[in-house]
Length: 483
Ligand SMILES: Cc1ncc(COP(=O)(O)O)c(C=O)c1O
Image (cartoon, rainbow, N blue to C red; front, side, top):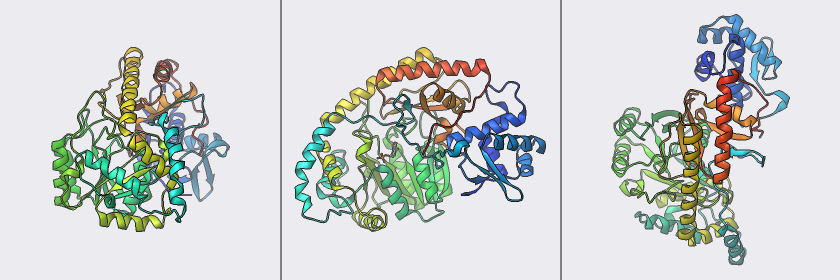
């Protein structure tokens, strides 16, 4: 058992369970049980947690206890609940399957599946050339032990130069190489956030960042993004009112919404954060990927005069996620402290992979230019297919990054994701990007697959969206996310 979910918490997660689309004439207990299964399948309700007692849930939902008793009975029959008299009931999955229960979004190995759950491109052709060149360089490092907690100097210099080229002078001792941006975030949190510390995040935001914050048992407050991005007064007001220890923001082509934070707000956020003693963790995962010639505002770090800003970034989005190379940009003393933290985690990143990154960065202009063209073509194919097959969905055209955030024609995101899985399309439903099971009206759609796959995926999604209304039944199948 990993914990307990209280009646009010489960009620919040269950949301509009009694009015879910496709419900029609099923009894209340079946609808309740079905929604719990859905939450389990999405990973929003963890496995192995104790559900509230029947009476407590009945009170929280303002329904009769008999309904909850019947729903729990059905969940036991379908293998989603284990109960022991006097001890309570725990969530589980049928057939001993395990889903990622932390909100982790893992790619599938199922090649038949069109995977729109992961927003990352396949490797560029230049990767092999870079890998071969890296093996030629390797002998230079083989005489040493190979542990470089802040990264090999060549890569730190290359990353520092890239910051300088973006208008933010940076020295190599301000850079620490990590095993991906996620690792960078985790290390920064270990350094800058005591367990239980307060953090402000955008809503929606990147689910694995929420998972990292959960790992620190962070107390999270959110800034809800509007249809056109951040609401400056609200964001600054939240910072001033809640005075969080830390704020995690994704200013460039925010995941999942694709918004780009304007320069004026960047400056004001840094000033407000400094005034209230908040550290800013700025995730620049998508900074290399403006599309349509969009001009980037200066990096957030440009406005920082008090070492309030820690920037994180990496190779995964412009180059390849499989490389597992990321970095932190911070003050030199902070980098040293991060290195000390890191020694207790994984010591250092692989030298060979860092050398591959050095070669890719040396060819950055050409590689990234190709990626941008590829992404623009794929985005347009996705937008075209959506306009044709799902014209009621509303999308803002993202000017960069790899995702768009579609507003659906109803609160059907999780139901749609389950139905789409049946027809070979994996989706990341809206609630995965929030904290409280809301955002059922939204769906993140990455444009990282080839255009033909995206068009095919939209065809299939449109077909199941139509069926969702027609058949009026929500089906359950064993979850495909098996960790
Ligand atoms: C905003 C954001 N941060 C971090 C990551 C993780 O990146 P990495 O593969 O470098 O760990 C991603 C990947 O999707 C992301 O979208």
